[in-house]
Image (cartoon, rainbow, N blue to C red; front, side, top):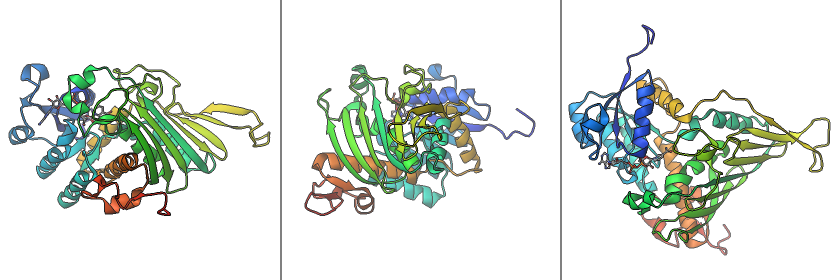
Amino acid sequence: MTASAPPPVRIGVVGAGFMGRQHIDFVRASAGAALAAIADPAVTLADAECPTYPSTARMLDAEQLDAVIIANPNALHVETAVECLEAGLAVLLEKPVAVSYAQSRRLVDAVERLNGRLLVGHHRRHHPAVARARAAIGGGELGQIVAVSALWSARKEPEYFTDTPWHSEPGAGVTLINAVHDLDLLRHLCGEVAEVQAMQSSHARGLEVEDTISLSLRFESGVLGSLLASDAGVSPWGWDQATEETPAFPFLPDEVAYRVVGTRAALSIPNLARYGYDPSVPADWHSPLSRTYLPVAPRGSFPAQLDHFLDVARGTTAPLVSADDASRTLALVEAAALAARTGRTVDVRRFRTGARADDDESPDHPAAAGPDDGA
Ligand SMILES: NC(=O)c1ccc[n+]([C@@H]2O[C@H](COP(=O)([O-])OP(=O)(O)OC[C@H]3O[C@@H](n4cnc5c(N)ncnc54)[C@H](O)[C@@H]3O)[C@@H](O)[C@H]2O)c1
C-alpha cells in the first residue's frame, strides 16, 4: 500500500455460512478492506480469528465499522440491511435483495430516505466477460439482437436441503436462489422484460419449493428469451460451472451459460465465443461460420465486486446494482411465479406498478393476462 492509499474499510460480516465465509476470505485477501467483526449466532470466536457477536445489533453496538457484508438467510435481508443503513454503514447485501417484491420496496424506500450506500450481490455483473458482452450487445457488434437463451442446471446434494431447512422453505427454491442471478444478468444484458410466461415443477425433489423452471421472456426491446433452470439435474451448463468463480463448483472451460443471437453474429457467454460470417462470403445461413473469441483480461467477479463495494463505501461511486435495480429483478422472479401459477402471460411492468402488496396471490392478478384479454 502506498502512503497516499486510503485507510482500509472496516467491514463486519453478518452471516458466516457458505457464502459469508467466502466473503470473509475475499475481505482478508483485499488490501483495501479489513475484517473487523462477524455477527452470526452459530459462529464462535475460536472459529473466526476476529471478534464475533451473536447478533447484528450487538456487533453494531460494540464495533466502529465502515461497512457490512450481509450473507444471512434471505428472509432476514431487509431488516438487517435497514438496521445497518440506519447505523450509517455502507451495505453489500447478498441476493436475493428480499424474499418478496413488496418487501424489497421497503428497502428501496429506506435507501432513499437515509441516502444510503447499498450494493446488491449480483456478482456476475462484475465479471469482465459480462462487461465485454454488454458492450458487444449495446454497441451493435452482433447486429440487431433477436433472441437470448440461458441455462443453469446442477444437481444439489440432499444435505443442501436437509441440513439447512430454509433451503426448502418458501423464500428459497431454484428461482430465488439460483435463477435470480440469471434473470438479473439477462436484464443487465438485454434490458427490461416486458412479458413472461412460465412453467415450474417440484417433481424431481418433491419439496414445497420448485426444483425446475422454464421461462419464456419478451423484452421491452422486442428481443425474445428463454431460461431453463434446475437444481435437480446434472449438467455442465451454467455460470457456476463455466467460470472459476468458486472452488465449490467444478470448472469446465468453454462451457456456456448464455447464448445471444443477433442479425450479424452470435455470442456465447462467459467464454465470449463470437460466431459470424467472413465479410468475403454472403451473410446467409449456408455460408461457413467462423468463431473468434473476444479478448478480456481475466478477473473473478467476487474480488471485482469487493473493490467496487469499497468505492461505494468510500462514497466515490454509485452501486452497479442498486436496491431498486435488484428489486426489479425480484419483481421479474415474482411475475414468473405468478405466470407459472396461473398459466398466463404476465405483463411485468403492470406487475411492478400494480402488484406491490398482496394482489400477486390472486390468479386474477391484473398483470396476468388470459388468452381472451387481448394483452
Ligand atoms: N452470490 C452468490 O452466488 C451466493 C451463493 C450462495 C448464497 N448466497 C446468498 O448468501 C446468503 C447466505 O446463503 P448461504 O448459502 O451462505 O446460507 P447458510 O445457511 O450457509 O449461511 C447463513 C448463515 O447465516 C447465519 N445466521 C442465521 N441467522 C442469523 C442472524 N440473525 N444474524 C446473523 N447471522 C445469522 C447462520 O448461522 C449461517 O451461518 C443467502 O442470501 C444466499 O442467497 C449467494
